[in-house]
Image 1 (cartoon, rainbow, N blue to C red):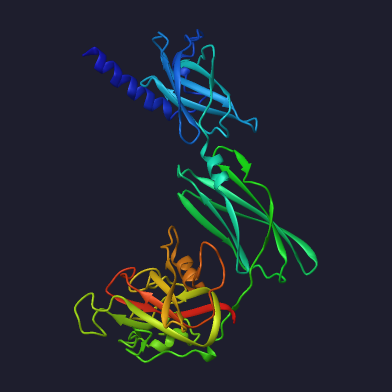
Image 2: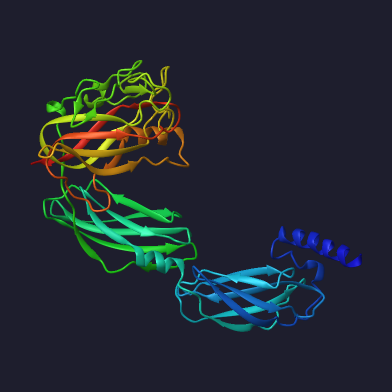
Length: 421
C-alpha cells in the first residue's frame, strides 16, 4: 500500500516539476550536492528512420528524477533527450546518417545533480532524411518543372529547390520550399517563361526538424517543355445523346446549368451562374446510378497534341455567393475525379490518356479556398512522364465516381493546352 502511495506522490511531484522553470525546479533539494550514480547501459536497438532506443538499469539513488541523453550533430548542435525514472528505455533520434555516433547517457536527481556520463556508441539505421533525398526526382514540365519524392516514415521534411536561369539576359536565382509529411509527394515550380531550349539549373536539398540538411543528388539542368492554350473559338459540343465512336454526349442543361458554359471562357464566381449541371437519372430516367459514367465530348475543330487540362469548379450556391467566400469549392456537387480520352479517328476508338483526382485542400480559410478555385485545378495529360498526346481532334472527359458530396455534378469551365499538329 505504501508503494502505491509513493508512486502516486512521485507522479504528482513530477508533473509539478515539469511546470517549473529550470532555475526553480530543484530548489526543494537545493542543499543536496551529491551526484547520483550513473545508469548502467545494457544495449540499444536501431529503428527504421534514424532513431535508436537505449536500454539501461537505474542507479540505486533514492532521489533519482530522470535519465538524460545527448549527442552532438554534424552542425555542432547538441540534441537533448529525457525520460522519467518510471521507464527504463530512452529514445534518441535526429541522426543524419547511418554512421557511428557517441551518445552521452547520465542520471539526474531532484536537486539537479548530474551523474558521470556514460558514453554509448550507436550506429542508427538509414535516417528518413537520407531515404527521402535518395528518392528525389526532378522532371521537366510545361513552362515548369516538378520534384517527386517518397517519405516512407511520414516524418516532417522540408524540400528546398534552388533554381537559376537567365531572364532577359540577366541571371535569376530563386528558392522554393515545400514542407510535407506525405508518403509520396509532387510539387511544381510553375510559370517559367523561357526561350525554347533554354535550361533551368536545379539543385534540391532536404531538411528535417532536427536541423539536418543534405543535398539530394547532383545539380542538373532541366529544359522545360512549352505549350499554349488551345483557342476555344473553333470548339463544338455535340447535342445531348449524340454518339461519337460509340459514346453518347451527356446532358448538362439541368436546372440552372448549361452545357455550353463549359467552353465559353467565363468562370462561375459570386452571382455569375455559369456552369453545367447534371444529376443522377437526368438523362436516362433510371434511379440513383443511372447516369454513371457520363461523358463530356469536345470537338476541338482540328487536330491538336494535348499537354494539360485546367478545370474550374462551380463556386456559387443557389443564393448569391460573395466574392472571396468559399462557396461550394471543393465540395457539394463539384466533380473531383475524371478520366481523359482522345479519339483515334483511324480506328474509331477512344484512346485512354490518364485519370486525375482533384485533391481536397487542407488547413485553408475561405479566401484561400476561393483563390484556389478561381485559379482552377491543373492536371497533366501524362502526369508521370510529361509529353504531348498524339494529334487528336476529339477529346473526352469521363466522370464515373461521385462528386465531393451530393448526387449531382457541376463544372464551370474546361481549358486545354497543347500545340497544333
